[in-house]
Image 1 (cartoon, rainbow, N blue to C red):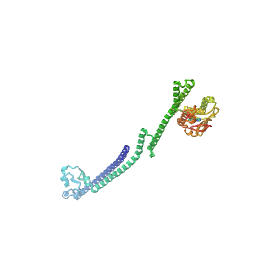
Image 2: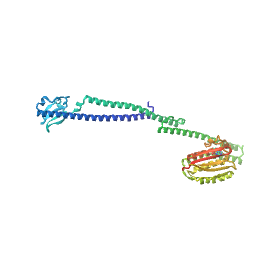
Image 3: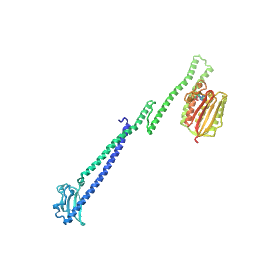
Image 4: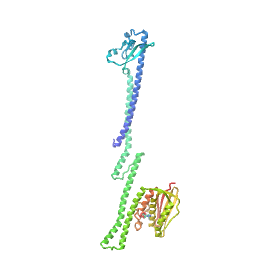
Length: 448
Ligand code: ADP
């Protein structure tokens, strides 16, 4: 029945609290009733004693003293009768006038007595002595039945409520503990390396939110795991080709099959440069992660920022005879990380440079749209095949065209662009036509 510790604990706590509450309530009611009952009995007894004292006073007045009282005694002066609790009567000189049979028989018991003066016309003519165990004596059968009924009702209430509390406790605790148990299992699976499982049917509360977070954590871990595997495979693949070329060339030179000519050594150096490039690119990805974690947002005046970048890269484009222009920029101040924005622009522009032929154009534009600003880098380069467009922001993704070209990189530049842009709350998109050119657009909120 209790398949989890948390279920057992919850049930015990709920049961303890509800039963404890009922018990305290029952005891309080019982105590209050008891007190009321005692008060009622005491009041009754007092009234009875006063009545007896009145009867005794009347006798004294009618007979002008206690003469003959001992012979006949007042009516009902016997144990259990109306005067059953009266033990004895003493006259004004404290001489016993009459005593009950019970008193005479149990005199040696030293029963504690209470007394009441008998006053006739303002003069004390004697004292009536009453036994102390009055309450027991006068508890009537009805009184007992009443008390018993009340107690029975209280115990019945405790029993029924206890049973109901138990049912509710088990059902509630089960409801609460089920998703927790499921989450616990998922967490254990994740620790054991099984990232496929997810929690279903989550409640609409904080526990449910925790479950959703756990599910998305599993999702992210799975993605990171897949990415790590893919990246390792891609890096290995990209290392293999230049390494194999270098190896075969060096072996050829050692075996004197290939002459150690300047040209051959230069082609070796080229391969080594490609390897260095790859390492640099990998380092750039790691650096982007660091930049994201240490973003330092500052006001960046867009026009001067873009003019600066344009001026710095213009000689490179001019060298390749590409027409490189910057159209007028709206007066916008962005609150972003300057280094990150520089990296983004450098990557986009170096791609435009790589994939555009001499005599063609590369342009930087900036526009304002409502609460956002868009910066575009357009080129009249080779363009990107439509089938590749959805994937070009993925790590190590390259189009076939760029793979076949010496100028192509390792497919990491756009990954860095996307990660940086999104980490700053922006977005990046691309449109391209094969053989006509491409346009990359990055958007940032302006915050006003
Ligand atoms: P790479 O370092 O290979 O350029 P990127 O991540 O920057 O890697 O780009 C991914 C791929 O997208 C490139 O290999 C190239 O095929 C394509 N690409 C990116 N920018 C352009 C562009 N301006 N024109 C044509 N193709 C591009």
